[in-house]
Length: 183
Image (spheres, rainbow, N blue to C red):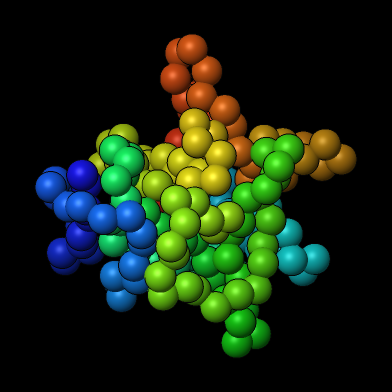
């Protein structure tokens, strides 16, 4: 089995852990999330996650800083990646990145669970490293679907987060997320 830890802001993967739940690891890192065409994820005034080009000053705003909260995975299923919940803080609340049917990603105010007894949770993703700064987030509720991005229909300069299904060729570049530290 795989358990995952972080040391000095680095993700590590460990084998040989048994169990069947997710437990709060008390580790949380803060990053900006970016897609391949240099648009940054943020929460708009309607409470929707969107991506757009931003200046350096705009990237430093609180509505662009996402916390990646790690969970220790003791599940008996062989899963690749670190179990995480993504959220941001706004107006004293935690707004969590959640997924639902029809490949939708939405924000929901909630307190982060200490322990998740189920095999899946609407806010739980598996974080997998691709390169030094590129990662993928697989939904625990919808296996083989990954956090990705697509243009907003009425405003093509914006993108919105969605779930992309893994195809025969694997997962496309639209599901690659660049993580950069917030300064």
